[in-house]
Length: 433
Image (cartoon, rainbow, N blue to C red):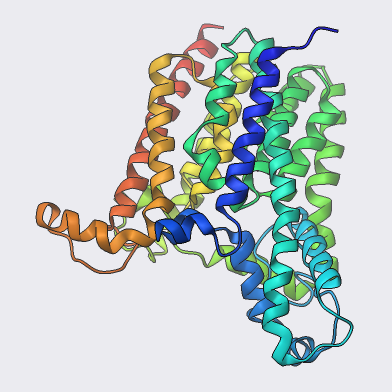
C-alpha cells in the first residue's frame, strides 16, 4: 500500500500546530507569562472553568454552590446548575470534562479552605480533555480538507496554508469552533458525494456545536427543496430528518433539562453587544441596539441571495455557496469573535478561485490574529497611535476608536470584498446556466 506523503506531511504539521497551541493555552500559560501578554494564552476553556466552577458565577442556586465549596462533592451540570452560553454538544463535552476533573482531583472530604487549590489542580484535567478533543478535530479537519482539494483538482498546498494560518496557532485551543468547522466540512463533503443523510447529520452536529453553521444548512436545504419540487425527492427526505434530529434534538434536550438554563442561554446571546462586528463602521456605539437590527436584516437577506445560486451537481458552486453562507452568517452578525474564522477558513481555501483572493484572505487572517495578540496591549498601542490618529489613551477594546476595532475592521472589510467577489462570480455563472 502506497503512503501518501503529502497527506502525511499535512497530518504531521497539524499535530505540531495542535501541540504548540495546546502548550500556548495551558492554564497560567507559560508563553503568555514570558511575553507578558495575556491575550496570547487566553482560552475560554480555562476562563469559564474558573468562572463557573472556581468562582460560582452564574449559579442558579447560590446555596448549592456554597455546599460544593464547603465539601459536598458532586458534578455540577451546565444549564441545570449554572448558566452556560454555548450550545448543547459543547455543554456535553464541558460536563464530561468538569465531572472528570472533579472526580479525579477532589477528595471525598474537603473543606472550603482547600477548595481553591483543588480547583487549580482540576482545571488541568479539564483543559487536557478539551485540548485533546480540539486537537483531534483539527488534525481530522486538515486531512478532510487535503482530500477535498485533491478530489477537486486544487493545489494540495491549500491544506498546508490552512494548517499554518495564524488563526490555527492562536485560536485552536481557545474555543470550540474547530469542532463545528470539522462537522460543517464533513457535511458539505457528504453532500458533494450524494450522501444526503450523512450531510444532514454532520450539519446537524455542527449546528448543535455552534449555531452559525445553520446558514450553510439553510442554503443546502433550499437547494434540495428546489430539487424536490422538480421531482428529485429522495435527497430531501434523507437530509431533513437527520438534520432535524441531530441539529434540533440537542436543543430540545437542553430545554428538557432546564427551562431556566435554556432561557439564560437565549438571553445571553440576545443581549450581547457588538463584538468586532462589521456594523461598527455604521453605528459607532458598540452597545447600540441598531447592531442587532442590522444583523437581523442583513443575515437573512445575505442567505436568501446565496440561496439563489443554482448549485446543481457543480462541486465548485457547492463550496462557493457554502463559503458565502458561512461567511455571510458570521460577517453580518453583531458578534464576530476571532475564533469564528475557524469556521470560514476551510471553506475559503476550497472556494477562493485565485491567488489574489487567497492573499486577501491571508490579510484577513493576519488581522484576526492581531485582535487577541494586542487585546490586552491596547493601552500601549493607543499610546503609539495617539499622536497620529488623535485617539484617547484609555482602555476600551470594543469602542469604535480602539486599535483593536481598527484591526477587526481590516479583517471584516477584506472578508466583505471576498464575499462580494465570489457572489458576483457565482451569480454570473448561474445566470449563464
